[in-house]
Image 1 (tube, rainbow, N blue to C red):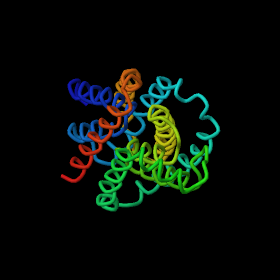
Image 2 (tube, rainbow, N blue to C red):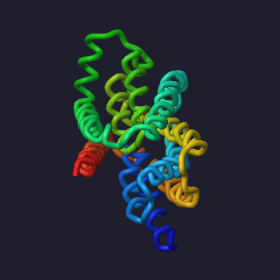
Image 3 (cartoon, helix red, strand yellow):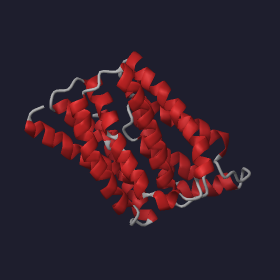
Length: 249
């Protein structure tokens, strides 16, 4: 990278870290930026994944107050995230990108609808099932699927996770967002370890993204925790729509 290209990648990392802490989809900033400066798609994808891990750490630390009382639940769901990420990372290295090109926008669209109608979905589910502090087996399977997607590409996995967690858990949106940040970090960190051994990571690019995303994750957490639930929900949906448009067109 030239110095100016490095600045562009760093700035994209800051933006991605901030957006990931609030909602997700930060890869929709860093991944195209890395392509624009000349990295091949697979190299850009795996280097971006590795670089976003520090941003995930600062985002989780920023939401540590909202994580209190969720330890047992997140241990269970974290297993699903790790297993799914390993599967998704292996798929990335074996399958063509076209395999997910149609599925991903649909998945993000469904997740956005789940976020919009989360209060009504919660009421509907509460009337038809026993309360479950961990969300039950369907949430576990959903988080496993989100982990596969996150290990494969990762853009907008946060929106998918918020849609799932918000629908199956009786929690306010900020605590759901905190749980999403931790599960997303587990997905990215698992894939990063896998890629470090078997994928063509550009470590200079990954470090540049890492420095930016670490700062962005800290700033994003400070902002996201101050947003009231309706405004946060609206922001999530707007980011989701942008993600769909960007991926389709």
